Length: 270
Image (cartoon, rainbow, N blue to C red; front, side, top):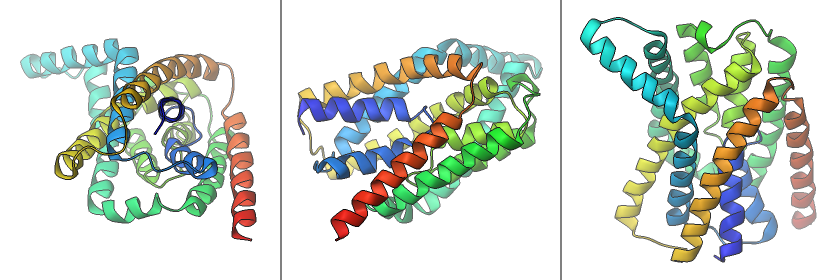
């Protein structure tokens, strides 16, 4: 892997983890379209760590407030808004953790299929469209119920499939529960933190068993920094964007990207 390839893949991981167009789908399809060799487990671990650092750097105040609220609950048993938010995040990550651990080998095999990722991009477009057309802009993150947290968590579990956007599914789920776009996006991004950390822990465990492979130190550093910087600035940009605009442009992008990949599959298959 060259440093240029590492930067491109790091930018893809850091940005598409939050832009609702599927990071998993892009990480499957872009190397396939360009004829690049697989990036390898070591590189995957490093860019995930970069994404974690980026999202923690942006939301560090939120996590600090949730930590303080947790300490207050231990002392007083008082459930503050920030402690409730933490519990909602825990509830939301459970479905993904359970499905991911029980059916890990099945999901990993799907990442080898460009066709599956291509079709799943169309599903992401439908999910985003449904969220915009059905949901009402009536509630914010402070108004969330336990059912909201579980519903969004189930949507995140669906996004284990390559091509289904994690942020797209969770934002659309929040919109279907009548949340504002910004509120749904904020919860989605906070929910990504424990998930990405969990994935990173699993990958690091695999790395200790299988050994480091696939990329030079320079490529690893380049991928890490690209993922970190892109994650931070994409989160900031997207939260501002969704204050006044819908997610339909991303649904349109998923349709176009899927059709292009289907065309390439047909040409290569011929």
